[in-house]
Length: 447
Ligand SMILES: NC(=O)c1ccc[n+]([C@@H]2O[C@H](COP(=O)([O-])OP(=O)(O)OC[C@H]3O[C@@H](n4cnc5c(N)ncnc54)[C@H](O)[C@@H]3O)[C@@H](O)[C@H]2O)c1
Ligand SMILES: O=P(O)(O)OC[C@H]1O[C@H](O[C@H]2[C@H](O)[C@@H](O)[C@@H](O)O[C@@H]2CO)[C@H](O)[C@@H](O)[C@@H]1O
Ligand SMILES: [Mn+2]
Image (cartoon, rainbow, N blue to C red; front, side, top):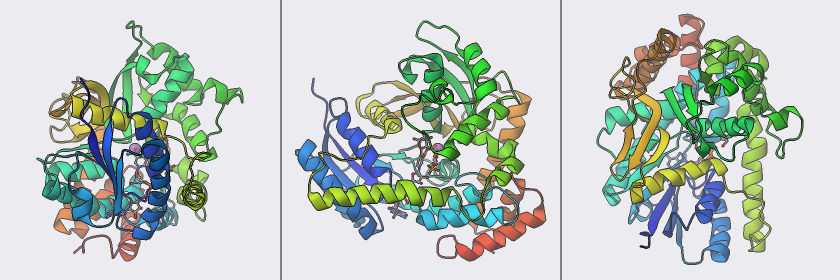
């Protein structure tokens, strides 16, 4: 039986990740056939550069796919089955401020964690809610697969403010780490592992990992990670096919010190910002943060290559690559479209999946996905250590959404102070006042 062809909208068409996702979709047309691809963005000029290259690629590799790039919501969101959303409200210019302002006060500057993530969340909530409202206005049967960060705060906002919307929030960090785990184990694919995992987005732990025969893989992995973090054997021996960027290499290595806090589990790399904030501050250059690295590399290279393809009108020698990690987006879309019952980590309302944790927290757990969406798999009771950490962090995330909803300065100050990355209430207030100043056009007014 042939599969129903899908109509996909990429919201944030000007994203540096758009080319990789488009190429990945083209590599999976046999499993996930597409009749129409649209881009939507609120920055026409930025999006047009990605669209011009995409037009060439589709003409050469999938001429049957109808392609439209637009900034008009009605044109974008009409006749759509899936919205793949990856917007960055304020773009990299604001990410740079998210990262540099806290560092002025000796506090971590990070895209999705701590004060940077809170500032980013206060910008993203409105942008993502607007996408959901457009989707429900013009294609009420569509699903949104949201990739826009900070996923934890965006997920809490969609739970609280759009509780009946067809949206699933996703993150590729666990996918990236599991791809490293399989290299450590010498497995073909991360899908040769079945995992148990719990946490918040960018704040979680693997508790059980087995191979297809049910063999426990945790002992070998815990042994490796406690010594090397998620640096792979090939990277350790200098034999890796692909060089990972220095800041990512440092992050994967730091995971070993995070794992020491609970040797029975394997940590998400992002926990390093909460466990060793002082190390992260010392390791940062307040004049040149990750945002600068990405602007100088991924953003620059993506647009240079897209413009080159558009200029020569062929993608035969394109230096763009399918984003391997984005294959999980196809897994998710396929599962919903064709009821495939895929098992994957998603950010969903807890509702008892973690027995001794907030019913209405947005947690990252393994789910079974079908045409009705995601059904979380229970992860049982969690230990006091993780419960304490998660209760503090989820309170931060919930306070940010309440601050956005109510326009509350007080609640946003509380959220900043409550973050494990913050030394005291005075520094929290100084950072808050600086962030308010630079986010005037993006945040709601706070009183
Ligand atoms: N969930 C994950 O694990 C994961 C992984 C990687 C990237 N991301 C997220 O994907 C997003 C895109 O990342 P990027 O580095 O490519 O960003 P980018 O700045 O290159 O692209 C984002 C695009 O969104 C557009 N945009 C901003 N606000 C908008 C709005 N209100 N409506 C429509 N379009 C809007 C921008 O104009 C830009 O073209 C970011 O939020 C990033 O954090 C998430
Ligand atoms: O600093 P950036 O913009 O390079 O990355 C920030 C994002 O990092 C994670 O996504 C990684 C992913 O984990 C990795 O495997 C690979 O696919 O690259 C992605 C982007 O670099 C994280 O999950 C995202 O939420 C961050 O935005
Ligand atoms: Mn993520």
